[in-house]
Amino acid sequence: MNREFQHNLRGGRSIRQWARDTTGSFFKPPFPWRSTGWDRQECCEKLFRAPVCYSATQLLPWAYEMVRYRKRSHLVITVSLAIIMIMLFFDKKTNLPLVKNSLCRGIPATNTITPLKDNRTFIIAPYFDNRKNKMIRVISVAHHKEVKELYCWFCHPANGEIYISKAEIDVHSDRFDFPYGATDLKCLEPKDWEPHFVSIHWSPEGDIEQLPLFEIRNHDPECSLVEFTVCISTMFGEYNNVLHFVQNMEMYKILGVGRGVIQQEQSTNGENPKDIGYYGQITALNDCIYRSMYRSRYLLLNDMDEIILPVKYPNWKTMMQNHQVQHPKAAVFIFENHIFPETVFTFSDPFNISSWRTIPGVNILQHILREPDRKHKVNPWKTIVDPKKVAQTSVHFVLQAYGNKVHVSIDVAFVYIVRFPYRQSFLENPS
Image (cartoon, rainbow, N blue to C red; front, side):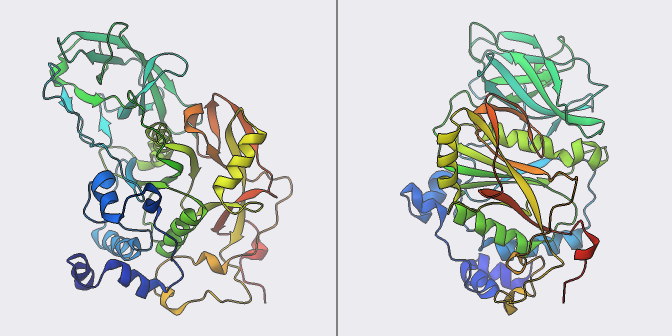
């Protein structure tokens, strides 16, 4: 980290001012936390448990430094899955299970990903799910052939009673032929008491004190704090599209996002990153659904370079209110991807701002020409979902839902994506 950035963090020229000097004055939407009725500092103290709050624009110099650091450090990535990083609203709960007054003496899981000793199963988090059957759904990654049997160990916190339930191992169908896939471990709860912690083991026999202990989430649902949460698919490799990242974050805020979740790859041990369900992106999206189930009215499931862009409405809220009235039983709204080639620029270029040219990444404001559809080719999709009505999702579509699926017309909204074009004729900017 350079000296100027360190000085800003220590109370010199503010990061906000530095970001403005760096990016110009284009990004000035209101901070999302003002809708809570709290001022900035109250928001940080009550929700974030942090001394400082930042907007996406303020994060630009941090992101730039992060990219520079990653290039210098040459990190070796072995197994990748998602670190959940909340950009606009942070998790109110800590990640450490509180077991001080409990007779349960497992090993509290402190990492985002916990590998079991079989080295073929990776646990993310367990969630209470009573929408169909009263059960615990454990979001995880497992080898689709080699993991045959797993058990949920529940411990009564008051008397230490152990209840063991054999898990139903449900590897998601959309595995893309990788050996590991997003997996739901489904375990029935004890009938006479409500567990708050669970351990996962390959055998019904053993010592629970030697097993990892996970706190069960969603037992006490929170009210919906925000209207929209965006779940960004896993960012992997040498990601350095900083300008695009910041512009998309600001667009999300303008369109109505209240909370953002970004999955950044994490190294653990032993496997090719792609083999773990293609960098764990499907598992990360499913975890985002359950983590946000009682905290957000809608979730947007898309990649970092994509924006679900309303055409007929000024923002997501107005669009979804109208569509929900038209389709009251809908759980999933599907939007078609359309590419705006990064090789084709606008003829008139009012947004070719000099201070942005030194920032790595694509300036989306320079790309407003859409690549025509290809004959006999179906464009990919992305979705807006009601998290309370979704059981499983893949990257481009929902696998299981408790409700209808609605395809939204391109005249209403579409997925705007700036990337390399499919057609050879768009490889060069037209004269």
